[in-house]
Image (cartoon, rainbow, N blue to C red):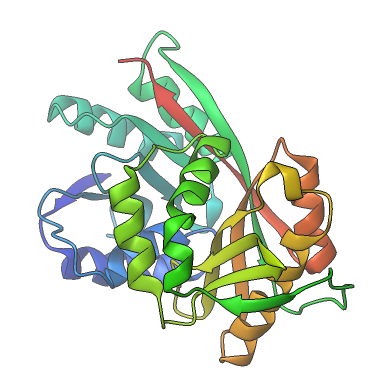
Length: 280
């Protein structure tokens, strides 16, 4: 087997994109890296593959520091030899990653090799879910609208609270403000309003054929009223009508309420991925 570390995003894409697209929703993160719609500087990214003796890619790895390395075994076929080789090569090159995000079994096998002596811990398990058709759900009182400038005074706090709830790396309020401000007029950020804003969700991280949904948030004192169900259903339907073949999202596997909301709308469980952090 052969380890390849890429210094060119186009070369990495030519070797991996077709393989990643075979499991498009599962690989929405590395596909979004390849698309690089924000034209981010990729010079510090860690892009690697393990190939067999015939040059076929068996394992794909992508990391955009300071975030976790994202792994995918081609066709989800376990290959312990490839996983060990990737781990050994990264350690040999003194390439440190803070953690791994991958299908459950793969995430743990890589962690056992890369972080020896069980020097790692599970951070969160997430369902990757896909929707092909929006079910007929009863909408809550109120209406759906797009983000506007009047929402900028509170929305950074909502998204910061979302990050806390989902155990994500916390952004500064200034960074959140900047990102939210860029969404105005883009028809990507929806808010459910019942006399005043009560829930929101955002379209982000699209793939070749699908549209990702994230930042689904309802402040605690408004929960239990179906607001999140209503706004996610509205955005999902809109995204399908724009020509996307499907929608997808990540949901906390340990949160039956949020997973139940998405299944009610029409999302189906595709796979479970684990985010594992290394203790060094």
